[in-house]
Image (tube, rainbow, N blue to C red; front, side, top):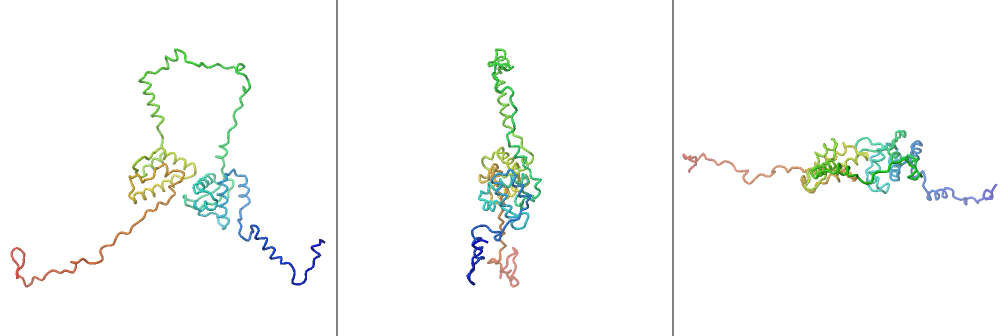
Length: 307
């Protein structure tokens, strides 16, 4: 028996154990202040998942906002995630789209729909991460050998007279070849979905490079955005521009920014509606006039009256 167990206290002078325990709770996190119940399969899956630091922070935020409130999904805007994680709204959007693409998160509906953690861990797909690894290079069996020991044929450093004669184009053909190369190099094949969306884009006064907008369009698709969401956002923006009277002006946003990393197509772009003015409620100054009494007058031939 220890010395502490042999200590006896006078009645009414025993140590307050509850006070000691409450003081200990103030020095650290306690379950009484709230906790998150997460399945072990999800926790173990996240341990092995090759996630980036931003993706891991987003996962923890979604876990806190869903399982912390006993629900499977929640509607989380980019501003809410930014406040929870300390990331910018743009970085939050990129991380969410990446996790949706990897099927770690799920979303039922459009870009404003609730999100949650996919409980089917076997469906998580990190194949894109594996493809980023540098492939093994084929071993060079001739490495370390001097050039003299290799069975090789030295290339001809200069063209022979015959080669120069055959390969020298005329001035006319050279100009044509140069033009043909430039024309083929500048051509861009646009997808049918982008062409349909571009036909809906508001007209703009000034430059609005289509090729740059197409690059941004493809970049958003690779991040997990759907073409339907982008087209829906474009329709809202077109209605907004038309309502503001900015169609065909320099105030129209360029396509490369609208489809850019800031994902302007996710904005609501609400159109302000005005109530038309009601008709005149008060009568005019001549509204109470009545037709004159002509019973006591003599009608003339020209239609007028005389006394």
